[in-house]
Length: 242
Ligand SMILES: *Cc1c(COP(=O)(O)O)cnc(C)c1O
Image 1 (cartoon, rainbow, N blue to C red):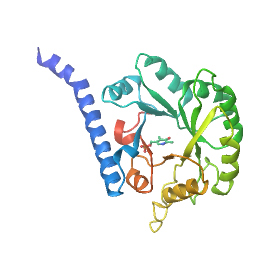
Image 2 (image 1 turned 135 degrees about the horizontal axis):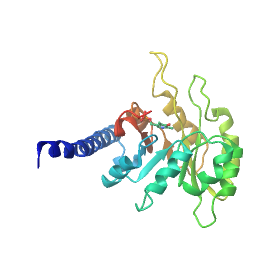
Image 3 (image 1 turned 90 degrees about the vertical axis):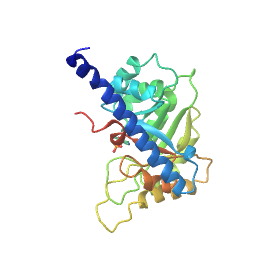
Image 4 (image 1 turned 45 degrees about the vertical axis):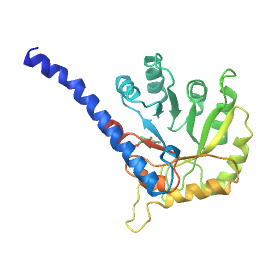
């Protein structure tokens, strides 16, 4: 093999090695923080947030054992799903803001939706869920930040939304999700949003098993407060293209 060929062959090798390294680092962070929190590492699942990443990268992640992928943009997600339809056991999670006119395709093509924050969307997802599939797993997205952000229901409106969503037969409410605003004040406890979400779920007094919280930078805090899904993009796949 010429030096040129050797160089050419090294590219993908390096890329694969680094995804593998990053996965090991993220897994180690999850395991360590679960242990510190006195929890079993198996209670915390890794959701690989693959928005903007090409299907080839997801295929590599699959080869490394990842099965759960989180996508934010419907069109992009559907394209990747088509490209990866030969892979068995993939589980697709929709984690982005939901427009009502996208509900049918989301209900047809995803296994989980983490970002339900209003009853109209919940009803549409319920109505559009194909009968040959099991109930759609959903989380209610809550805005627990003290800062104003666009998405998520406010804590005081959560109980009413939960009561309306839990009776929809084609949805299975699993728990709550949040994306905290970046901590703005140094003296603000960055674990607070995660603690609030845990308390809100407890307050619903229902058999819920899911707290979707924690991302690349703060997954330790979230796991300490009870996260069952951490949604990790950057620390797994590197900086996003675009
Ligand atoms: C992009 C995104 C993530 C991942 O963020 P990183 O900081 O890249 O880990 C998690 N959750 C949601 C809802 C996202 O949109």
